Image (cartoon, rainbow, N blue to C red; front, side):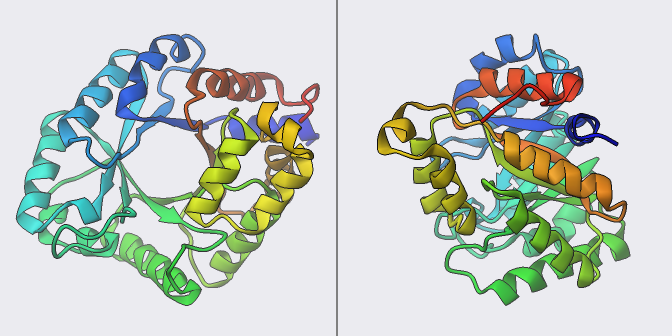
Length: 289
């Protein structure tokens, strides 16, 4: 398999996300995205669930597949969780991404395992349930604790038949992701992985988000790629090298857990959708970062 074929295979089922405030961009993005493409609706502090449900309805109307983020720490207790899940099901939402969220807990719920193990969650059936992965660590959380949490979710998926998978935090290099994936696999984890990648936005903005989100080793790669301060401010970042590196590794390792990529466009929804769709169809042979 040549590099372009490997890229096409990796991008065949890519996903992308929008905030509830960005759904107007879907009118144009939907003209290039394949029907059924997963579009994640990001959780934003201060934006209520109804906005996310409205965004999900708009995504579905355009022939795309909404995946709604549910931030556990924004939910005070199991009764509130029960109500939120009921609203999601009533609105026809079939796919979730469960995250802890960066805010302080609103009540007794602090992590996604509490939700997954709860009786109120067990009463609903979702087609897919994403959980977070952190190849470059999670700020303020011990690496061993992060690994154990993911292992417990993997065990829960196997024992209870939950359709879990992992979406990783975004990064700028393939090597940290590949090393983390091998470590998870060696620990017995079998959950499929969607690798988070930044979209086509400015490197300066990516550095800002990377520092705030705890992305570590691959930030050095971004700075090396973008060079001078002037270039950092004016360039458009493309994750070409990262996609190629991941695609080669996955093509060479049939046991890899990496199944697809997920794009965090940081406002550049349409350019990212166009770039990823082009790579999905044609590979990235002519692309240069």
